[in-house]
Image 1 (cartoon, one colour):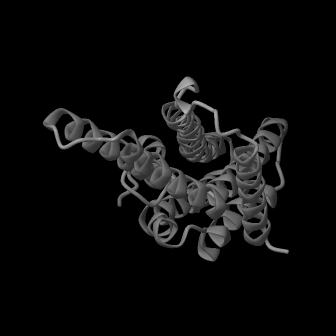
Image 2: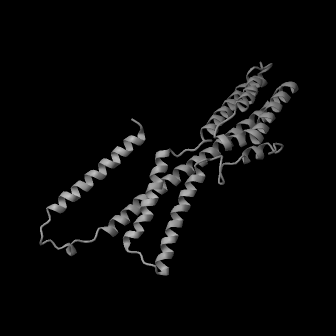
Image 3: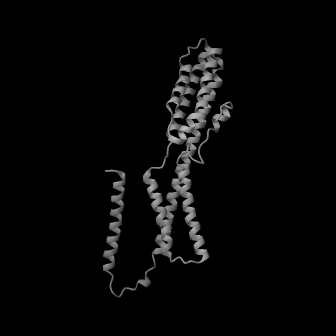
Length: 254
């Protein structure tokens, strides 16, 4: 059974139980009952639904913002690790050092010029980027240190390449949308219900009431747009950037 079918059954069941209890309870009310003595629950229910939806919106915004921050942090860690490889390779012989630095520069240039655009469109990494990073790894791991000084620098360089690979994997995991479809379903239905409840409060056509209703609707739409925009950390307006690569590798262009 899919999650959508399970959700539909659960929602229908809860609604049926509540309506059944309400109908049965209404039949037990005597003819001498005075409904004016019972407080009107419409305003209370409207308020509670608004509060619950506000909490859901807040959690959704916090979740997508955390995903965006995590994506930006993975970019920073990857750029920093590659910068360390670039800098620490200075202890190696000139031909090895130049090869390592050239391959690091090639990888960084490819990431900021080609792979970044691919992530924005497809939400995933490229095989070419993986191949270029594997080349950097091979440059570092396959070299046999010739003295103690190079030997002391070998393991830290290997660790930095591993850190870059780990950060790259995290970047790939954060490249796509983070909000499940069922959450979007709840957010949109909740928005329709919350805005629709305005009409249960006998709203009139005075300027003040229409202005408040309009502003409330605009606020809900803006918050949903904000969630949608943050939901793709690398693909939309307020997205993670390649700034850490440009800061540490000024020669990289995009």
